[in-house]
Structure formats: structure tokens, C-alpha cells
Amino acid sequence: MTRREVILVDVGTWYYMFAGVVAVVIVGRLLAYSGKRYLAAAGGGTQDRESAGSVALLVSVLFHLVTLGLTALLAVIPFSGTEARVFLLRIGMQLILVGTAYAIALRMLTNRKEEAAVSEFDAHVQQLRRESAMQHRNGFEVTRDASADMAPQPGPKPRLGEPHPGP
Image (cartoon, rainbow, N blue to C red):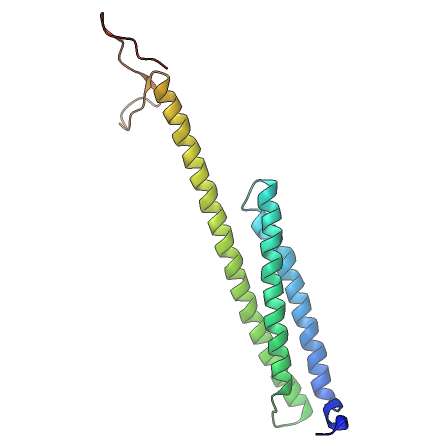
């Protein structure tokens, strides 16, 4: 293979490469921007927002690498037909692959968001348990009886001669 053969590629392939790279970059940037906002809505703290930006950026980089690689692979696969038909075939396959990769990336972001929501819920439950334990130590009885009043019930009063329960 001579140097001249390596450089020469048909015009339709160059058009395809240009259109494919532009589509990947646009969709990838959209994924990074919207993914950051999507994940930041799940968490409340500034650390969660920073983490959301990092995760969205990592997913976006993975999206770019995979789809740009697929774009290059589609460019070198030989197809028969007119230049216009080959261009449209490659663009159609490119859009299907970009859409599939985008769906996978969104699923990754959704999994991260669900993990953050579960973590936040667990932290809330732990806080409620700590508060409940504090109320119990302060002389209030904690009950699981649904018919009991919603307010904490005072524990039994000590009888004459019994020690008073401490805090």
C-alpha cells in the first residue's frame, strides 16, 4: 500500500466522518450537561452536586469514546452501492448506535440517581432511629402499637422504694 492510497478516501466517507463526529459531540455534550442536572436533583448537599458532575462527566467521556470508535469502524466497512446510498446507510447505522449508547448512558445515570435516593433514605431512617433512641433514654416510652397516640408516651412512674430511671 503506497502513501497515496492511505491518504485518499472517497468524499462520501469524509462527509460521513464529519457528520458522525458532529452528531456524537452534540449528543455527548447534551448527555454531560443534562446528566449533571439530572443527578444533582437527586442529592441535596454540595458534595452530592460535585459528585453528580463527576459521574455525569465520566459517563459522557465513556459515551464519546465508544461512539467515536464505532464511527471510525463504520467508516472503514466497505458497502456496495452509490455514494449517496452508502452515506445514508452509514448515517442510519450511526444514529442507531448513538441512540443505543445514549440509552445505556442514561440507564447508568438513572442507576446512580436511584443509589443516591436509597442512600438518602437510609440516612433519614438512621436519623429517625437515633432520635427515637434519644426519646427513649429521656424517660419516654417508644411503642410500635398503631393504636397508641402519636405523641411519645411517658414511661411508668417509679413506685415508692424503687430507684428513679436516669436519663
